[in-house]
Length: 515
Image 1 (cartoon, rainbow, N blue to C red):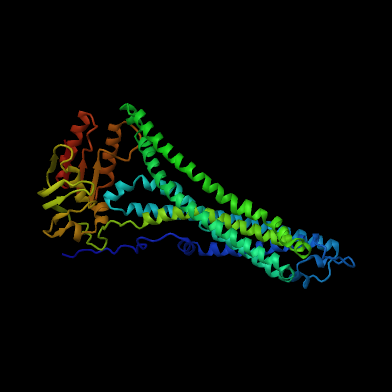
Image 2: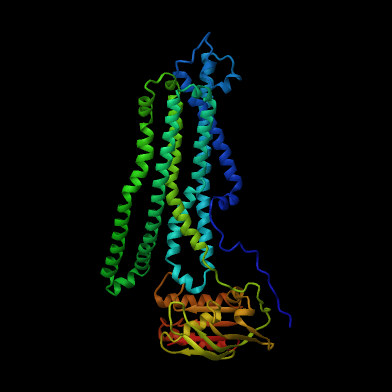
């Protein structure tokens, strides 16, 4: 018999790391476009600053109504003669284009923020879908925090930080290069002190940034725990209230919240010092200390505005440093999640032809236990499930009834033994090593449990709608697995359901779990 092999579509690399270069490759054209626009408006802003600097400088002398001397030297060669009216017109044109380019730069930056955040969110959710059964149960609260908070933090920051650092560095380089001749005439004490003060600000900023980064990691770890408590209460709010457990859950949530609040407050001093000392203390003190060191402004005075603007851009870089702490913390959490091992659905495995039906499912000395338990839920379990009748699974909770269905679905795999599938043509396959499990779940099996995705109606109404939906949409399935799917139906509906199940079992392999 020929077996159809369906090659899966190319998969993105597992454990793909999220960083600037990953997102750059995804949005390369838009990033380049934004950086080019940033370059243009930064150059224009430097021209405007130097015009203002020349305008208030004592060096600039206007002769014969020629205002070209107020322009930066790089522009004077193109505008050797400028009347006052033309000078004003040129200034207005520069300001107009500066505003236009700045507007589109901000517009495109916001676009990259939104798209970057959504890309990270989708990567996280795709990863969550690929986690093994038990890992998915364990991480279902963590993924909420990563999607709601960390993907947004990365989306906001990933392109914003390098772009703003680039803009500030470019401004500093342009100012130094265009004012180099005047800077070189400064007092040696002024030059030495300026370099020393910049180095000091960098060292202090680096020190505080490391502290903030360490604190952010601690905070987000505790935040995950708090959100787990909140999600559990909000998801089961009516059940908790009905059981009279609201006070206990309130106390548990407030305890977690108070712990997080105390942690944040303990970090508050470090964050405030990080913002205050490098930017609003050391940088703002610079001109006064420079005057004290130099003793007089003379030639230093002529460069004060340009130097002040250089320091302002260094301040912007320092701001990016302390923003980087939160970004790096989110990046670390996201990449750790993306590095988790994925389930093996044997995508290169066999896909059964549509005309071939399943005759029996044989459990051969199957043993299984969950990672969270030291006890075997199934041990040397041997049983055959056959087509043509309802295969009942009765018993108390915890004896492995649902686990048997999970094994047949390929959601979990036996630690020992094997599950053999026998088709109508007598061919046998080891379910977990021979069969494409993803296709098997989507096409060959139909699964329905007491829990469902219907959101409206009573519990019984939701179960009835769920069963009707299953039988209407899974007509191609050979195997029907029902895990207490009718436990909320009234007696009349249960009897009707069991009659329909008997009819279904004549042509399908049906396994019916019931207390």
